[in-house]
Image 1 (tube, rainbow, N blue to C red):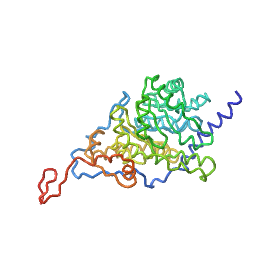
Image 2: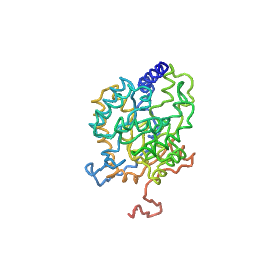
Image 3: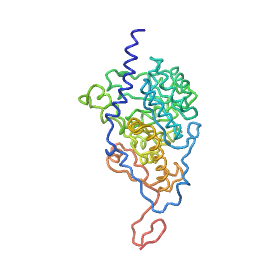
Image 4: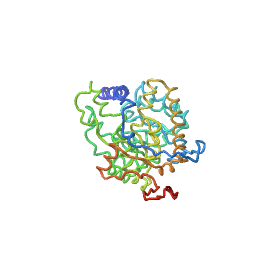
Length: 378
């Protein structure tokens, strides 16, 4: 038993270190990202108003009032228990789903369970996702789900993070069998999510074959665990080979959206979401709902729970306003809007042979006396 003590304390310490490192390595809010390569074409004559927008949908057999959720962040320590209590209260009051941070620590340290259970205690009727890593067994998955009375389970895959971490895993051979077993054993939806490096078509195809219910691409552009692990080692020098690894969230969504739709797998978008406009961009690119971690955590830690609640309320209004501006009543309507994909995102898609998203359904001819949408012009 004594041999386990340093392992437990090291894991607990790492949880709090991740909170500090996530804030220290967070990119500036005004730093351009791939989201900025996606723009909507403005229509000057919308025919609806904000009261006509209906963002609710059914997901995982539960009514989802808004296509936004509080994504996985933390847990396992007394400090993270307070963070989770605040996040759960914010999610409850905003009627948003919330995901726990990685619960794998509870299998080594039973005392850590309370830092996760608080999510359900504070938010007894809300939608809560449990979260484990892909090294966990189906029995461990069932235990984590029962602990939170969870509505779904996130299984996070984080090979790039593990390989950049001194104490991280170096073997991933059990991941696929574990995910398949978990999907077979659980009676609730299983979501596989990355932790900031994106999910490609080939990876999504494997996950679909393993039986997952949903895929959260969690792409590059926000919380960067490669940088976090460098920071934890005492500075940013050395081992920077993974700093820009992976696919951005827009790229990953565009790449696998048709595959997920065909397979009946729910596509979720997260990773680097900074604003209400980024949420709408994700929804346009194929996500059914959008998760936010870093932006919400930063607000909570620096400005408090009340301010986070205010910002979420602002985002919810802004998302509705953007839908009305785009003349869209529902998320399905949004898929038909005209967008323009430029910059580095367009270059990446072209280089990889991934079709650029549909640029609108109208046709313009340039003949003399041309016709635009059936109207003669001179």
